[in-house]
Image 1 (cartoon, rainbow over the protein chains, first blue to last red):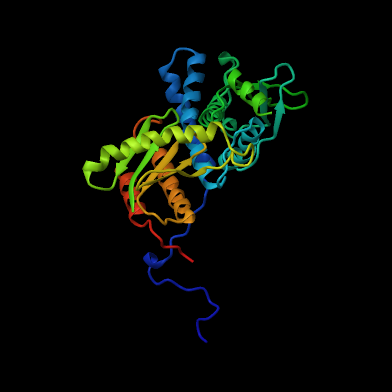
Image 2: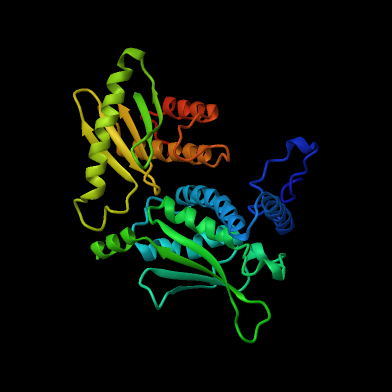
Amino acid sequence: MIGVGKPKQYGNVLDKPLSRGRQEVSLSAFAFLFSELVQYNQTQVDNIAELERRLEDAGYAVGARVLELLCHRDKGNRRETRLLGILSFIHSTVWKVLFGKVADSLEKGTEHEDEYMISEKELLVNRFISVPKDMGAFNCGAFVAGIVRGVLDGAGFPAVVTAHFVPIEGQQRPRTTILIKFAEEVLRREARLG
Amino acid sequence: MIVCVAVVGHQNNPLYLQSFTGSDDALKLHHIVHCSLDVIDERVNNPKRSASTLNETFLGLLYPTENYKVYGYLTNTKVKFIMVTTDLDVKDADVRSFFRKFHAAYVDAVCNPFHVPGKKITSNSFSERVGTIVRSFGPSMTL
């Protein structure tokens, strides 16, 4: 019959069905917005620690909402109550939704019981940022550290999260490591759950 | 017939409270919701079976009073949804799907950048969506 097998032609653009749309935002749009965020905060503060704190707070709000959204969308009916569970949730699911891939590695700290590290060769937010020498050890990954802190706090695992540069021999740009230090009560609860 | 829904934050602070009957019952319904918070805390902190129900979000029937039934649901961020209904023969699956839709509306309300977490939810569209979900609750199972 005529018309069978051909894709339906829509005479009017208003008749086209609404697709679900791409689930991604363009990297350049995000990089632009993020650079404006950093610049705006830079004009408002006097020192680096304050700038880092502001970026972290911005990330915290994002993290809290991301947790609600992902738990509803992906996790079905489960709630994370174990430390390793929530860490692997962040390391794979959250990273995949936010940055399009899972994080490079998740390690447990050797010196202290309560430290864990998520490292990434190049954080997406840092890709178009070069920090001037006089700003020292400032890392725009503080934004991502804030996101992780928001997710952990919302799920009931209070922690202090910071972002650090770790130089690696053989590579020009240093790796970025997100250091997560859990509060006392989390470790006690974890020990109690066995 | 659902008579009341409530959203309670993780420190047991009320975030949203809405009753769907005449206002003379409203205070009693708020009191029922308040009492059911204790039952939720008990369920969460002392699980009956050690590992399997620790992770569930849907808490099920919390307690039946003389003509109401109270159902609870716990999200990953310790935010609790409570639903009070007068139906005597409501099916478990209906309640679960109600909570799923309610959770979706809640997530949308929280993603609002102007919403401060911990404060009451003041969005009108959230109230409307909740009203629609409540009205469509009933023994109607899509096959």
